[in-house]
Image 1 (spheres, rainbow, N blue to C red):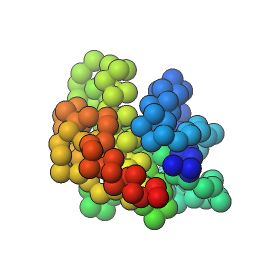
Image 2 (image 1 turned 60 degrees about the vertical axis):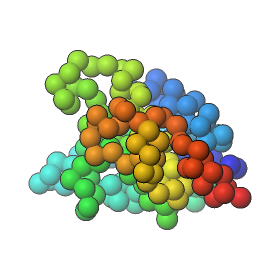
Image 3 (image 1 turned 180 degrees about the horizontal axis):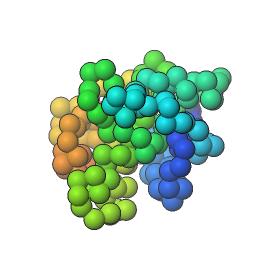
Amino acid sequence: MAKIIRLIPVNTVDARLADRLAVCIEERFLTGVRIERSLALARTALNATRNQLFAPTLYARIARGFPGQEGFALALTEFDCYKTSQRYLFADADANTGTGVVSLHRLRPEFYGEEPDPNLLFQRVLKEAVYALGRAMGLRSCHSPRCAMHATSSVFETDTKSPNLCEACLGRISRARQ
């Protein structure tokens, strides 16, 4: 794929996590990944009642903050995110703009009362990043529970899926690149 993937930290995201994620995304999508400057987003951007970030608001901010950029964009944020059809989300994307988001908020083991585990967090972020980028590239959710494109509604489902695309999704993404 000729288009570059831009990784955009929102406010502060662990640079080591972003660097490691960039390498793994590059391996899976066989395209360059560039880590962009951080996108500053004030807490006032959150829905005051829910204390969550509406994902489409983030897509619009990325479009304004990085105008005229080609390729795909994946935002990483510590904010808890949602969209109209979901109370919360781990990852989401807008295929029309080629923009996705991964929310680290509910992917952290600490959210569930567990000890911090950077490796577990990274595996969860990687799986959801592959899912979000696949959606940004036009793939639909996959019915195979092991495929990274399988939509998950719990972090435990995320833990059981693979960080890789299944053969069917690999074929779909290959056809989309042509």
